[in-house]
Image 1: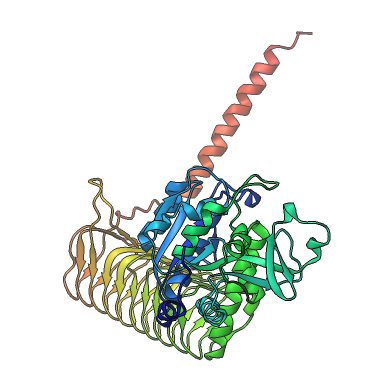
Image 2: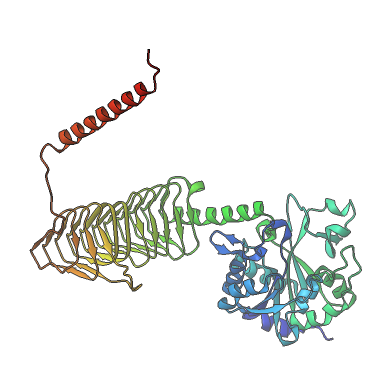
Length: 492
C-alpha cells in the first residue's frame, strides 16, 4: 500500500476534518458497578457523552463508537447524539475493536480515543493534530509523562525516537520504571489503519489483539511513526469509582474557576457544584452546597443560599434563593424571593418581586408580580394574579377522580385566608376575599367575600359536664367492684 503524499496530507490537515472512533465496548469491571463504565456520570453527564462533545467541538465530521457490553444502554445514550454504533462481537482487544468500526467506509484522518477519558478537551485534540502535521507521520500515538504510570502501557524509545508501546502485563521490571505512558489516543489515516490492523497478532500474555502493536507493524511496513506528548490530563482515564470522583471534582473545579474569573462570588469553591452549560451573571453569590445543573441560567446580583439544587431553570437578576430550595425547569423573575425550603416544579413561573416562602410547592403555575405565598402551601395548575396574598396551608386541588388535572384561576390583589382548598376548576375574581378554612367549589366574583365552612356549634359547660359524667362512671365502677369483692369473703 502506498503511503500518503505530503501534498495530500497537508490538504487533509488544512481543514482539520476527521472521523473519530471511540472505543466503548468494555464493561469496566474495576468500577464494581452493573452500569457500563462509559455511562457513569462525570459532573452530571455520562463520561462518553463528554468525549463525543469534545471530538465534535474539535472538528470531527463523524463520530463512531464501538459498543459491546450493555450495548442497548450505550446506544440509548449515543445514538441521539448522532453517533454511529458498531458492535464488537467478542472482546478480542483494542485492535479488533477498531476493525469493528467498519474502516473500509472511512476516508481521511482518523482519531482513535477511549470512551473513559472525560477530561479530554477540544484544545487538546487540536494541538494533537497540529503536532501530527508537524511530524508528517503516518501513524502517531499520544503519550504523556505522569507521576504514577500504574497500569498504563509504557512508551519505549531509542535515541529519543519511539520504538514500541509495551503493555504492563508484558513489561519487564526495567520497562515498568518508565513514566512516559500511552494515553490510548492515536491518529492515522484510514487507509493506513486498514493496511496495518490485519497484521497485528495476539501473541501476548492476554491473548488479545493490541492496538499498541500498530507501531512496530508500521515501522516494519515503512510508515513514519511519531509519539505526540500531551498533558497528564489527557492521559487520565476512569477505571475506578475513586477516579470517577476525581474526574468529577476536576471538572467542577474548572467550571467554578471560570465563573469566578467572570465576577461570580463563590463562598466555598470546593463545595459548590456547577455543570458545564450553566451560566451565572457577575455579582451573584453562590453559597456552599449549591448545585446548578443542566441549562440553568442565573442573572446578576442574585444570592443562592446553602444547599440549593437548581436544574434547567431561568433565574432573573436580583433573585434571592434561600437555603434548601429545589428548582426544576422553573422560571423566577427579577427581584423575587424564594424559600427557604421551597420547591418549584416544572413550569412554575414566579413573577417579579413575588415571594414564595418556606415549604411552598409550586407546579405548572404562574405567580404574578408581588404575589405572595408565605408558607406551607401547594399551588399546582394555577394562575395567581399580581399582588395576591395566599395564606398558610392553601391547596389547589387540581387532580380529579377522572385522572385529569384542572386549573385554578385567582385574580389580582385577592386575599386568600389560611387553610383554604380550591376544588378546580374554579375562578376567583380580582380583589376577592376568601375566609380562612374554606373549601371553595364555585367561582367567586370580583370584590366578593366567600366563606365555605361547617356551621360552628357551641355547647355551654361542655367540659364540666363531661368531667362530671366521667366521675360518676368511676364511682359506679368502684362501688360495683367493692360489692363483688365482699361477696367472696367467708362469713365469721
